[in-house]
Length: 490
Ligand SMILES: CC(=O)N[C@H]1[C@@H](OP(=O)(O)OP(=O)(O)OC[C@H]2O[C@@H](n3ccc(=O)[nH]c3=O)[C@H](O)[C@@H]2O)O[C@H](CO)[C@@H](O)[C@@H]1O[C@H](C)C(=O)N[C@@H](C)C(=O)N[C@H](CCC(=O)O)C(=O)O
Ligand SMILES: Nc1ncnc2c1ncn2[C@@H]1O[C@H](COP(=O)(O)OP(=O)(O)OP(=O)(O)O)[C@@H](O)[C@H]1O
Ligand SMILES: N[C@H](CCC[C@H](N)C(=O)O)C(=O)O
Ligand SMILES: [Mg+2]
Image (cartoon, rainbow, N blue to C red; front, top):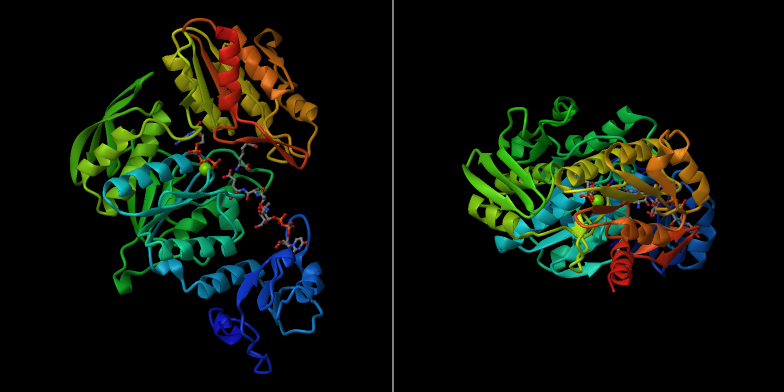
């Protein structure tokens, strides 16, 4: 694509007629990935400033540069005020606006995003619609899976992925939209048809200044739904009516709002909810009919996730009978309240709870279904929100009978400091111990467990690594638990 054609996607740029109209064969934001014919877009990152790599980019074959700070280069340089947003628009244009060629659902909120995307995937697939999924666990195009670095990838990877989905005849894309992504404009070039809000509770206060700032980032997804009454494009905001911020969130969108909930009156509701250790049963009340759902998913939070997915599926015109089949067929989501069972007389559950709210939810659920004691093994990630550490530890002690605090992904922090942040204000020393090494902590908890107890291993869920420093070591809570159970039971 010619540079000038590419630039036509930006409303405001310095239209310098002297700019040579070079052919762009590739877009790169990393100088190490620049090839002959690349347009190099400089991003001022959190770790380094991409503007410093212009020389290397040119040496590797960059034929034009987009920058927001002064750079010198022997190739055309186009200056813009916001290269993050420019990247999103240019990548969308370069890949021929792929989100205009498929239907797109975005899911945002503190907890439940991954779960909802997989519930929706199952609903669309059961209705014979080919899907693509982008999120924390992986990217999926049909049944093909690809590893990911971020929950919501940067705009370049994102638009390329949508382009591959279009090539693979995907009709429905479903993606998690993180608050970081919204704040950094990663999804700015996407056309969403449905935006789903799950809930808002504390997380990521290392990145966002405060909860208002965090809420504002989330609300951008709803603002981005746009106002398209004039071209008759139907778009929907699916909002959790029981969350305290829902009324404020509704004001962020000019599109039709569909609500779901269990307490406040909503369009899609669950009534007569019965929660057990084997799943949840409820009467699903919707504008297109009512039906009983018997799901294998455990916990009240999953009832909310099912309602959110159902609301989006209904506006996407999936019949209620298909929604029921899909919901009843899903037994668990990778690393979310996943049981590790080798026939042992106690339950071992691996869960991705890594926020105060999610930990509270899963522990409350564990407590409700436990016949005897609940043991929890939990830590907090390094280089992330420090203020959630004491909150998570206090929640662990509030609900569990006994806690083992251990390392999550310490990243570049000293694990002892993280554990100290978690435990220094705790007042019941008889109810917990600290074991830095996660494998030993898991083994110890399983050693303690007796018949009918529950061991909840929280924080890492589907992750198959543990990041210590900058190195990711193989580590899978489910594998470690399996080995520990085997060793104990033999
Ligand atoms: C804080 C944050 O979001 N960081 C993201 C950001 O990294 P960064 O700002 O550190 O980038 P940088 O290393 O400073 O580099 C700046 C620029 O220089 C370029 N560069 C760098 C080196 C070089 O030799 N040449 C070169 O051109 C880089 O390619 C980049 O364009 O840009 C990277 C590339 O797009 C992201 O992978 C990275 O996510 C990191 C891994 C991360 O941990 N992000 C987390 C906080 C995150 O985004 N989380 C959310 C959700 C979490 C949740 O749901 O709970 C997510 O969506 O994943
Ligand atoms: N609706 C919900 N409300 C509160 N907690 C939830 C909800 N759904 C799931 N959880 C808890 O949060 C954890 C993470 O769930 P899930 O992966 O679906 O959320 P997410 O929003 O994708 O998280 P992330 O921000 O890490 O991508 C689960 O393991 C469970 O403990
Ligand atoms: N996407 C989240 C995942 C956290 C998972 C937890 N295991 C941790 O490492 O803190 C983050 O990067 O904050
Ligand atoms: Mg997720």
